[in-house]
Every structure is written in structure tokens, then in C-alpha cells.
Length: 239
Image 1 (tube, rainbow, N blue to C red):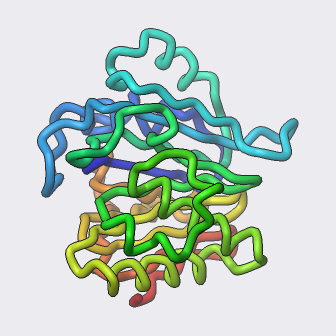
Image 2 (tube, rainbow, N blue to C red):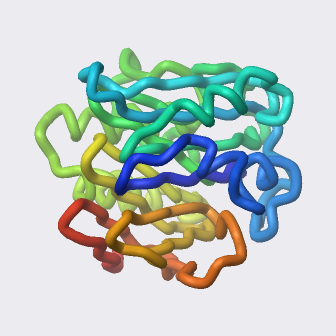
Image 3 (spheres, rainbow, N blue to C red):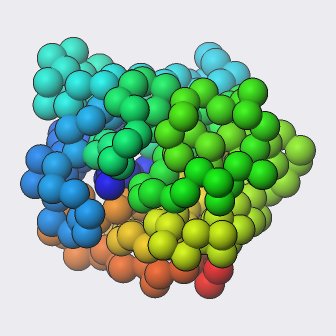
């Protein structure tokens, strides 16, 4: 049910999440090691990053498997940022395979990815249908998150509110969210694996569904937790 990863810190290439690590998202798309639901993530991929010349993030999404995009390796080598987010998708049964259903979702300065599944009715009351760009569950989750962010709610509080509400409505829901705004990052662990790497905290922080490589420093995030990362540090707290 998807794999995602994000970086916040000194600028680095998008390829550092996808192609360069021994178990980056390219490899996780066809041989994930810790994925609990689904075998491959071949129903599309997406990435987002921030450029000082733009007020909003740059986003690139496709419905083909990440290994089938011949243009991506060069793009990922040259797209550099201090805040990166990427995801590979395994569509839940009954969900459409289309770019509008593929993470990252975006609104203003925010990028968001959802790893998991949830009943759409569990978030329907939190979102305006006019703001939902796809019929898939993740698009409804994204719309609920963005509505609260536009209203001025902090990023971490917003993810916590949406995830706990949806998780209460749908006890079988899996709601690992990963979101950023260019200067801060937040993520939830709710029903899926999530890992944090602070091997070199002076450089930045990596968050991923599963470790991108076999280096030391990867820490499993407890289920039903919230990660908050900013230039001031990283905090993990229970949801």
C-alpha cells in the first residue's frame, strides 16, 4: 500500500530518496522489505521539492511504475532541495489509477503523501467535495488536511487531528501521512511501518516507510506516533 520518504536538511538531490540508496524507492517499488499489504508498488509514483524561485513546490507525478520512466533518473539527479518528498504507489482495490490519485498531493506550500488505506466516509465530513481531486481515499485525506492548514492550523496538529478522527471512524484504517511545507516536516505512524534516520543530525532528517539502506541510525517509529521535524530539531510523540 505505497512506500514514501522525505528529507529535510541541507540541500540534496531527489535521487537520494529514489535511485542512490541501496534500498531507495526505486527498489522498494518492486521488492519492498517491510510492506505488510501488497507485493509491488507499480501503480504510479510522484515527487515534490522546493525551489527558491517558486512560492509553491514543484511536483512530478506519473501513473507508470517508477522504473518505467526514462526521464526520471536525470531529473532526480538535478532536482535539489532542502525539502524533498517522494512516493511509489500500490493502489487499493477499487481505487483509480490516475495522476490525480497519486501522491504527493499539494495545496499552496504543502506536499502530502498517504501510505495505507481508509474508508472514504471516515474523512468525508472533514473535507469539501469540491476540493477533492480524485475519488481515491488518499485524495479525501489530503483535502481534509489542506482545509485545516488553510485555516491556519499547525502542520503537526492537523495531521494528528485528521488521523485520529479517521482512525476512530475506521478502526481498520491505515493512516501513515507524510507532509511538509518547505521548512518543516510532519509524519504519522498509524497501521504501517515508519522509520526515522538521524545518523547525522547536523545535516538533516530522513523519514521513510522502511529504511532506504543498511546504514546504522534507522529507528522504527512506534505505531500511533507523530513525528515533527524542523531546523530546531526532531520530536516523536504519541497520537
